[in-house]
Image (cartoon, one colour):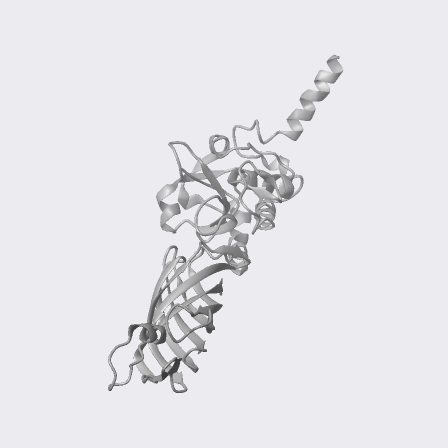
Length: 349
């Protein structure tokens, strides 16, 4: 019995050495790896989970919460067990100044309540990897300490692995360059490009009897900040009701879920609606303000380095009715109003 107790004691000591530590992991626990190598192994382990969905209390590849990512990264990368919750990791880690952060250190946040509720692994260059539970992109992603939300909720930094300035300094720049080369998350600020395709609806007013009025496509490029983006869009539109092809070039301003856009447009063909009492011809082949509208989308779904979203648009395309005739609201609204729904995918460069 005494031997069994003795064996269990040593088994717990070696399997859970990180949990009971009151200071950072000692260099002797790194099993022959240098401190620099251990830090890079930890980051590489965390990066292997990029794109894994967020799952409360998750601790495997099917889903991870923030502390689950830290726990599993230490275990799979270094075969070391650390505390399981954000608060317990914060209590266990050695507190350091933000200026002392090195790749492989930990960053902590108070996102709810009054105690530490979120943790990430610092990767250099002001960036950290973590499992986000809220925001435009969730799951295991990269974020920046300079983003307004994380800057506001940041509480401090901690060290779990030993510091070895001579060794770590030699690999900080390669580590940061590796992080820069890593596939970016849609949540990260930066330049983006994208494609979209939509169905244009008809049948609501006179002159467009079918629900299928045409199709529209979109090619875009722009820049995204944390919660705001600006883009230039080339919109190709085939209008079956007017029997024309339109080519607007618009400036789009807004967020991931709401944008306003406006710009010039050129129309190929002579716009005309076929009505019960004859054709109604319109003019306005070229217009400086040829497209003005709003776009509303569901929250984007993170796929790779970009985001897929379902969106709807309502746009005004100013065509003039014949001078000899007065405004006829049914066909004239049909000619000038476009309603479309479709899918778009935007990805970071």
